[in-house]
Length: 437
Image (cartoon, helix red, strand yellow):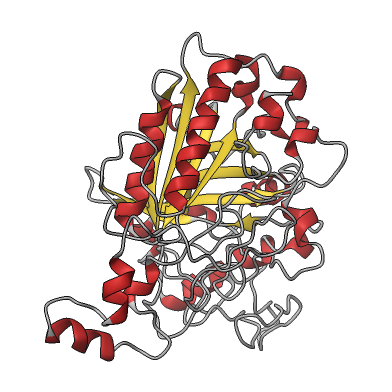
């Protein structure tokens, strides 16, 4: 966890409308899509009459919606673009439901099998993101919904290049992350040859994509691990707000914004020193961070705010102002101590306190039940994107590893680093420039 996760007012959730998503081949926004919902004509009927949910009950609920909230029927219409300069699911808005899944190539599978698999996966992702059924053996799970902002993103792990004989094409930025003293990593839920991120605003649409990807793997790859996550649903608040994590904290104020002059160079691979197949791509660090909520919730509200360095109500820094007001690290109180404690999480993770290191965070919360002691197995599926993890994630985590006020309340339990190549042009599949080089 850092003070840099996605803001709904920046990369995050915007007021709902027919989606215009980043990702056209020239880097400009795609034109608003009017296609891809033919499989699910829900919007052609329910959209014209409000919510057809049993006469007056549904209509009354729709009329009473808070100002600025999205009509539920509009959620299915939002569509992200599969083809483009960058893969989807990086700069797209946070979705309400997510699945992270890793695969290992099967014994005997190599470059040829990997290329066929990525071709299948890309074709399936493109169709599902357009609101169409899977190319084959569709389960029908999502046949009543629209695209629902579905995104499917693919990445390659360190071992993928050994298995495919492409070691010379492996980027140095994909070298294993250093060990951190605070890690309590489960190897069975870490790493993997291939990684897939799925996000959607409808749970059935997200599961449908997960099932299709898993079936498409066939005999070429076997499941290594899979994790499920969630975020606040669109329209749940009267106006767009920065999301909250399971600690109740506003989480995402200082995320890099596409409007920043240096956004692309921080998030996407632009340097000529990288392999050519990574142009337009990004590196993603994935961490399963358990929150020790029973301990956290014993703290008084003021103590929680001191741990983070921000007010719980609105995310404003303890030094004063509103959520986006720059934090005054030198401000002191009547007793002479810093208003933002020296070990506050938000102070330690600031880019200007870490040589400018920044990451585009796009996480999901998770809850996987309760342990034998009754403690919730819950926390954050940390997903962060950067042009180089050695200049993004690693320096910040090294500093956190020395201890901040939040460290006693979290536990890093799984980890992965993956290279996500640039987006596929129409007629191409993700990773084609690598696998057919």
